[in-house]
Image (cartoon, rainbow, N blue to C red; front, side, top):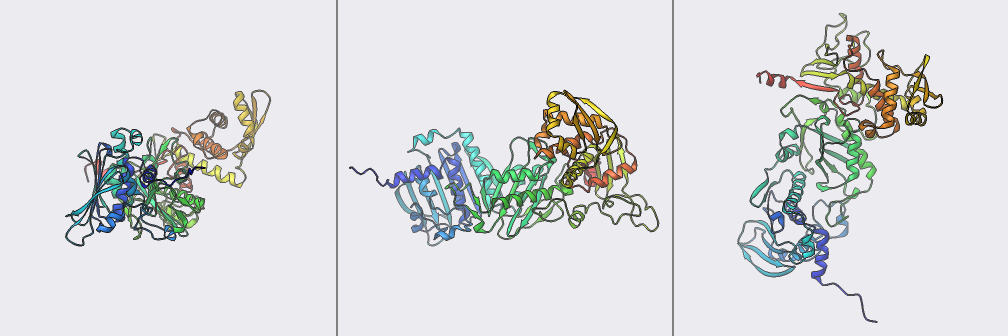
Length: 606
C-alpha cells in the first residue's frame, strides 16, 4: 500500500501556524508591539497603511538583536523568553512560543532592521513568503524595526476575509490601546495613513493613561478598586454608577501585565455592581489581576488572548468583592462637579503595570466572601459623616462626620444632629464641611427597605401585622397564578395571602414599613410588576431579590411626601446603615454631592 502520511514542508507548516497567530493586521501589530515591550522599549512607534493591509511598521528603542539572533528569530519555536517547559509557569513576558515572527514572515514581504548597540552597524534582513532573500549590514541606533508589506499576498483566500480599511484600522487601534493600558510607562505613537490615532507620553498611573486616550472627563468618573485574598490581588479602575451608560463597554482585563478576555470575570464585575445600575447599562472597567505564576495558565492559544485560572471561583469572588467594596463608599455617589475630582494616588508595587489615580474609595481593600460590613469597616466607610458618639436619646447611626450640626441637646453632649432641610417635599439637604448632600427621599427609602427585606429574608422573614378587615382583591389570571407560585416568598415579605377562587385573593396580613404605607396600592403594583416584568425585575439576581426590589420600590415613601425633622433624621441614619447607601435598587443615585469647589466655580469664586 502506498504511503499516505507525509511531513509538511516548512512553508506550509508556517502558513498553518500563521492562521492561528496571525488572523488580521491587528494580530501582526499586537505580536510585534508585544515583542518591542518585551525588549524593554521605552517608546514604540507603529504606522499602518490601508488598515495594515498594505503596510505595518513597528519600531522600538529596545535592546535590539545581533546578526545571529536576527536570523534565528525567523525559525519556528526560536525564542529568548523561555528555555524549558517549567518556565511556562509564571512567564511574565508577552511572547514565549517563538511562532509569531516566522508566521508573519510566511504570509508577507517582511523587512527587519535591528541593532543591539554592539559594533558600528546593525543588521537588515529581507524575507518574502518565509524565504530569506537578503542579509546585510545596516546603520541604525539600538532597537528594532519590523516592516510588513502586502499581508497575505500569497494567501489570497485569507486576504479575502479581511474587513474594510476602517474596520481593520479600528481593530489595530484597539489592540494598541490594550497594550498601552498594560504598560502605561511606555510611550506609544500610532499613525494610520499619516493620520495620528494615538500619541501617548509615558504615564505614571493607569488613570492618567485612560485620560490620555479618552479624556479627563471620562477618567474623572473612575474609582480606584483594590482587593486582596491570600496571594491573589486585584486593582484597577471601575466607573461610578451614575456615569455609566448603555452601549459599548470599555472592558480591559489584565493578569500579571497581560491583556486577556474573560466573560466570566466580566460577569463577576456585573455581580459586584448588582442593584447599583439600571438594566442595560455597562460601566467601564480596567482591572489588573496579580496572581502567582502557578495559579494562571497563559499557554492556552497562540493568540494568547485567553488564560485559565487554577481556581476561577476564587478569582471571580475576589473581583466581585473588590467592586462591591468600592460601591459601598461615599466616592461612588453621584456628583454635580464638572471638573475632575480631587484624587488620592495609589502607587503600584514594582511588578505592577502602573499606579491607579482616581476618585479613591475609602476603607481599604475588598473583603472577599463577606456580606454586611462589620463595625470597624462601617466606621471607616462612613468616615465623611462621623462626628462622634450619639448624644443622649439618639437612635440609629451616629451623626455623620463633616455634617453641619445643630446645637447639642444638653451641656453634657458633645455632638449635635445634622442640619436637615426638605426641599420640594422630595429632597433632603444636608450640609457638610465639603459642600452639600442632596438625598432623594424615595430612592433612599428604597435602599433602606431593600436592605431590610434582604436581611429579614436571611433571618426567616420580616414582621407583618394582621388586618382587622382583610383586603379582598381582584387580579388578572396571570397575577393570581404568580401570587400562588410566590406565596411563600410573599409571606417572608410580610404579605399573608390566600386564594379565594377565580380572580380573587385575600390579604390577611401586611408589612408596616412606615406610617404613610398604602398596603393595597403597594401590593397591586408589586404583583403587576412581578407578573408582567420590567427592567427592575430583569436586573434581579434571583426570585427573593426580585421580590425585595419590587417591594422596596412600591412601598417606599413617595416624592412629594412632607417629612418631619425626626423622619428626615431617621431616613438619613438608616440609609447609612445599609450596604450600598449611595444607590437605589434601580441603579439611580440616592445622594448627589455638590462640593464647595463646584459652588465656588458656579459663583465665580474659584
